[in-house]
Image 1 (cartoon, rainbow, N blue to C red):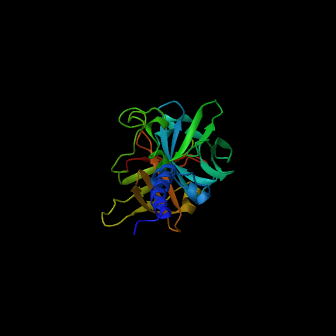
Image 2 (cartoon, rainbow, N blue to C red):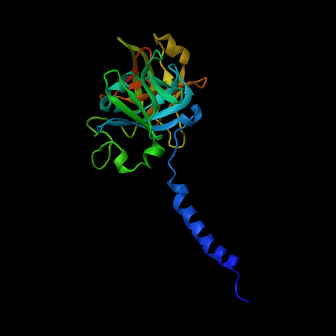
Length: 264
């Protein structure tokens, strides 16, 4: 029996409709990533860059609370690559944007969503324009969307961004300096044990800093470029390496806290 006309029409129209749907619906993998819209989603690694330039920095926005909002971490070299970072002490999430704030929780860079929906933008007090992009989105952007960068990478050169020594601080005796006060306390870092994550710290008698005495450091460890002193009660302080071999508290808030190696 020959096919009916209605059957022939359906056989022709169905493939055409499927083809039209494929042409108008983008593949799921090509859909653009979206910016986080919660505090929990904003916590993570971000790419901070100055508009139209090659200077950039990778920030880690922590969900943990600190003295100035929430804790923000970045390599020491960021302060040279982007001088505006010298005053950054924390971050806040508000109005669907991110604010990088100083020690008094005053905004230094207030980021808001850009029209592209994949980045945040802010203007500094000196008129410089900055972009802030989650690393997972920055890795997906086409080359035409990213600021110019030197080959082979956009990271600051070693001369402009000194890195902490890969082996970490040398065990031994360290003097603690507070601002203009020198050698207010002394700490002895024991050699690390390969089988243990942390090594003992001994606070020597005669410490003239009540804050360190109350803190009462018990152990230390070095990981991811950070020297971490841990108190007996579980509190911790992170320090980053300075070019002259000293170690400074990070973030640098309140009174300066610096450790330097000394001879017994």
